[in-house]
Length: 453
Image 1 (cartoon, rainbow, N blue to C red):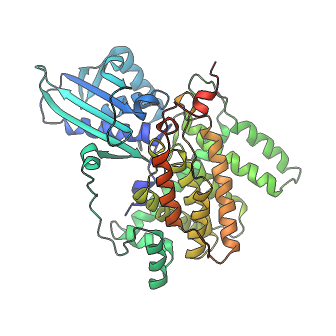
Image 2: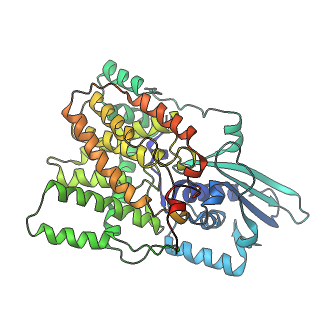
Image 3: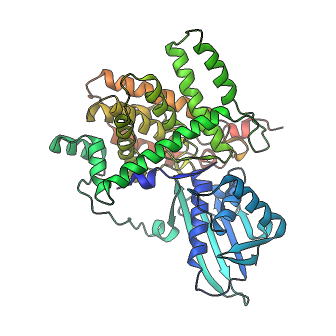
């Protein structure tokens, strides 16, 4: 079971696998050093995709913040900038309250040569005492969506311990069978599982919190002017789009085409916030964090009879779908390309919207299947190693596709030829066949065809 507390993480941009994951890993490593002795030197090595696009994805910045004790869900972006500046200029880092010498240019190594044998997002942390004796060495993998696992777990294919929940399902078919046998909806099954692990009030409070963070990211992104960080100097478009759409609103031009423009705006606003290092929710990743908020905002703003209960069903249902992709394939762009990020987000949002609109389990499963089917083979090729081009616009298209997928599924009775399980298996196989040049290394696709100035 993949809990909604794990799938939907509150963090900061620009990347869940390259920012949130490394920050969590660095923080956990720093905490593990307490009581082991006096640390004199600290060294971090980044391999694979973390090396190739780590600078554009702010991985080195994330490592500094994590080692300094900051966490993705609570870090203040403005304080983070000050912390990074102090370490970079002063070459000293506060490790568990003790200052040590640390020069990021020397002590964070982007290793482009050493293979990452078990996952393309691999990192190693090493702490030594004054005599050079290794106090601790950990190799960790950021496997997408902010999830971090020890490399040996992947090396030995150790399955995580299953939590004690009332409804176990590892496939879409098993999930559908459960709904038929119990008479429960997908959302009710997920809620029952979550409530077996913590009080139901805590579950509902967290759902409300992640919805609030999503909506705040939409609002903030529609207001913030300026240029996004990085050498591409991409100008924020969301505020201008917002002004033009607001002007059209007063001319009574509310058409289906304009509604899709609003959906695109919502997604672009969130992902511009992500690119700027703002606060948002991994859904299921940062690179795809705009899809679900955009579709949820569409439901809240444009769907008649939208309710808070419908929003709750949206999140719970999408949790089941995201968990199936996480368990049976991947949500890591470095592992399977952008089909594992925007594609999975589209599938989750399509299922969530169908549930919010009152769709049955078969219609929801169909919506999820449609959402992914038309993202199969999508590469992850960020220009300049930045989560900007084509990532921001891809979220807008993913959100529109999700709404279309839910609409098509709701017009049918849930019967279809290709199952969600078959699409998940196909996505995994397609990702395995995809060249590493197209999997978040910025060595292929648009990343090399676009002439940077």
